[in-house]
Length: 234
Image 1 (cartoon, one colour):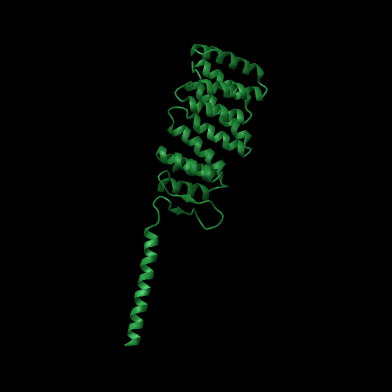
Image 2: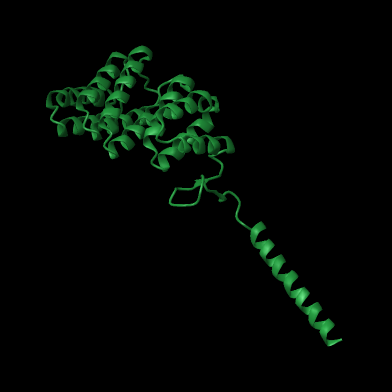
């Protein structure tokens, strides 16, 4: 009888432990499930959430596995990555940036620009230029700015996103590209894209810091005219 009671007590304790363990699993907060990309090690983790779908995770995994083989990366980008919807493609790009996979991110960025853009995304260009500059990829910055200027030459420059445009100019100046900043401002003037006070100040201070004093004088003069048109007094 005593041995039977002992066995029953042990069974109840074991079942209670299992239930508690199961509750810990099911009570795990939603939206913070981590999915490790490939074998365990020092790799960064992919975080499944609202901004990173299963398709985007698979794309990032495939690209990282092909890292170091440019031909294979190009093949994955051209056959699989470009088929993602824009939101998934953007999420994959941001995840690659987060994991500092800059060379792969640049290839995805170029593919995204060709496949999904109707208008130039100034903010996204700014993010890429800042990231590339932080990693000393100056040649890649020059190529990207060249592509951007060609795009603007064909499509014009829009004043609908002055905040993004200001971020872009700040990134270009931060990368030490004074000539590119001047060309962007010239494109703004040709396209009748009028800046705001914040944009004028970024340009003026940045150009002066880069030794582009003549261009800075032009910006200051244009700002004075704009400010008076707004009813302000200098």
